[in-house]
Length: 238
Image (cartoon, rainbow, N blue to C red; front, side, top):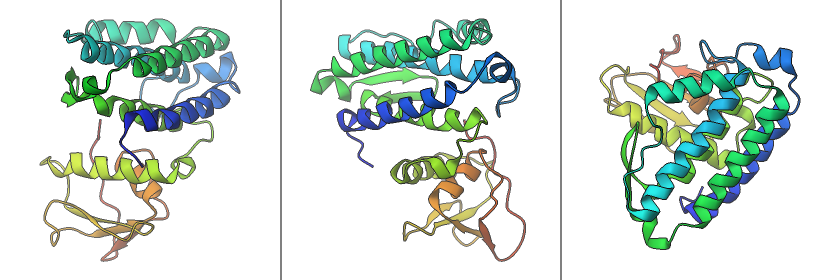
């Protein structure tokens, strides 16, 4: 998968359409049911995706203008907005998602080439603005799974699954609460290590299964462990 934000935006558009199709099957009862995220209903997940689009617009605007614009006014304001929007009618949720997607696309289109190299500050630390389109794609695809209405890691595009696996493994490799692992995506012809390569088991399977298990979005069914034994339990990723 390309890392060029102007190419990746087409993937964002497709992921948005997939999410909207799924969300369009919900009614008020199913919207209020629990998602896969503890304490959040499906309405919370959809509202979060709308507000996170606006948060990324803030970061892109800061990169374009040279101003320090935080993604959210505060953590408390972010959480309050999500709670307030979770119970809205599904039609209002869908309109909000479409509007947020439009604002994000417009913010991407407004970026001068040199602004993509600007450093912005998010809750995950400093990063260049060019990664924000990937951030949006990751939010859409992972939280689509969190809705728990039939969209699973197996439905992720192959390029997305490969990149998500690389990112998650790289992030976890720098933490001391992660068991040593060798990850072997059987559809990629390479291995990834977390911790010392000779200290942990090898977990093998398709990239989408490895990525889904590593970030806590699947049980790991279908993966193999060598030497034989139970799958390790990865810590929370984000």
